[in-house]
Length: 356
Image (cartoon, rainbow, N blue to C red; front, top):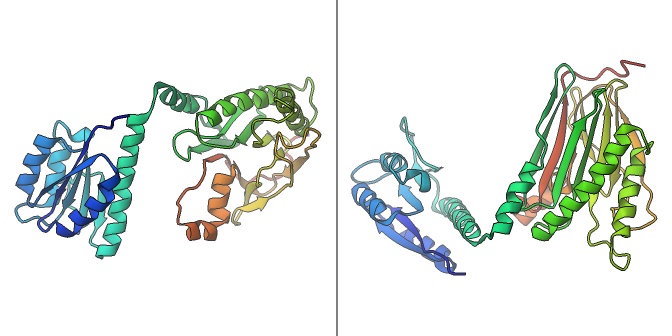
């Protein structure tokens, strides 16, 4: 595929150092660097070149870089232009920019600027390289996610979804029955591509079907049976008795009337529970991944809600960022996996069983 050249404009009275950085960073991208040494030349060049990214030193000889950035953002092409202000001291009223970097040492400035420039270029290249199938999948994965549920005086259900790149192997859903019981499922398939997206759709169908059967009270009597049924289905539709994926999952049932959170896990790291005056604590349960063993059995556990203020069901992508912070710092990767979570916040701390 042929990439369109991306124009980047640097406006700096002494551009040599940053120009050298940018030349190295841009060497593997279809980008062309342009340089202006004052605000007026920078405004003219921006009008002629239509750069996608403009890097502006606040200390310019003729006018403030904040004024330059604000003029550009209010121009006809402003909505399509990203401005990066650096060497920022006091911020003027009505200053407009996409990124602000304070006065820092050169090494720090280099690190911060590099992160923003490469993020911008990678996003542009990904956008240009997407086919219709990827764009459609991106749209659908968000459409399938549930909206928040607010039950006044009882609880609020919200969620978090952040793909590792753009397509996620994670997904979740939840719903209320006519009695106010909350049911939900969160699962994590392998990968972050179009294949993972297809696997997510198939697994969502299986899990949601069996969870609704459980909620109806027609067939299953425990959440462990829901997972066992899905596990059997994965083997039933596999080739040579080898499922394509071995996803992790959690299914749950919040019975508010009886003040219990019922759950069953398949390979998930645990749930996070917070009680009054305490930090979040991990509630773990050892279990098989789905699709790992055709004869695997799963366990249903009950969590009494007395004193509980919050419950979070999350995939390992979020769990590891919180509870393996040292490993994340060592790897120096801000996010290494899909992140998804279902959060249940109670209107007031639970007091134990309130209805027989």
